[in-house]
Length: 206
Image 1 (tube, rainbow, N blue to C red):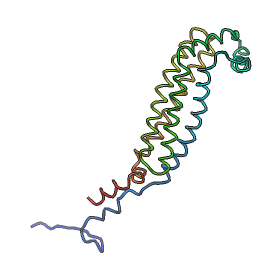
Image 2: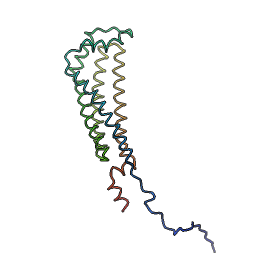
Image 3: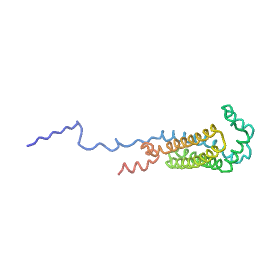
Image 4: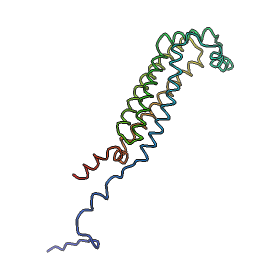
């Protein structure tokens, strides 16, 4: 003969607790905060892209631009003439690097901006649109930066070559951060519940 022992709390009918206790609460604040960051980031990307697009149409750099770009290089001990840098600019422009980087980042910025607005309105398509914009900007930016770096390695002093290489790394890191922010609302359960409320209700009913 065996004795069985069980312990039950007062008021416990032995049934499982209602599913509502463990239901994920929609997080509306998180996606909206990320949306604002994406919108601000897209505006900054647009400014950078505009500079590249302008460079792709510029036949000659102004003396003011040359002084701004080369003063610190010359103060650092590297020798480069205005004509040498102008030749580098011409080759980079003719390679299409400025145009590719400018337009890919500009179109990517527009997609991220629109995606940010949709995400602020708690539309899940906004995250997907922003991710697409990040991918486009990253691919175009990384390719163009590598092209510019390769040309600079042939024609410019080491300090400028290193600067262009680091600019490529910075572009990649910024796009990776932007992509992670864009994907976060899709990965977080609370944010998904806010973006796709119908899906959540269907699961709970089942």
